[in-house]
Image 1: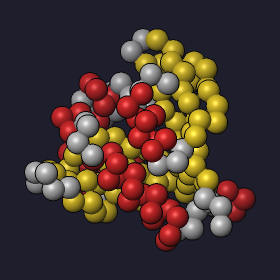
Image 2 (image 1 turned 45 degrees about the horizontal axis):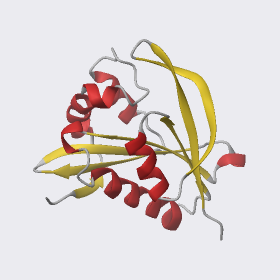
Image 3 (image 1 turned 180 degrees about the vertical axis):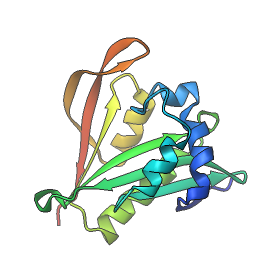
Image 4 (image 1 turned 30 degrees about the vertical axis):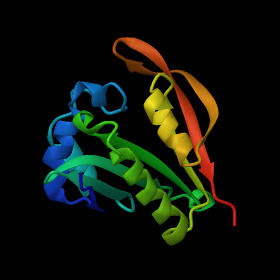
Length: 163
């Protein structure tokens, strides 16, 4: 399967909304469950310096990774990653391709020194992916989010690039 990676456009927002609504995706991201359909479109239009990258397979958008950068001058060396992949494409290398792309951009183009992300501690597949790209668990946020009616813990993970 060919996977194409490109910058997101406003035209991708409907497909991204549909991905986000998939039960296996929704349970592992921090988006609002009942966010209106134009929520992603509004976030895209107001993204500022955030970098939105999508993956395409079989002529459709199947994943998104966002690299958010701080406006605070003391934290401009830090980026925060958010990722989601269409659950029909889990285990097919989409997440790896997105992570590879965004870490390359962060390291070589943006010269960021630290990348951060959060992940529910039960999401073992995602944790393995992040560790594959050099992320380490730095801490646990207890009861950080309401998920499926239960308060869930999150790992805070980070990756440093020194040099």
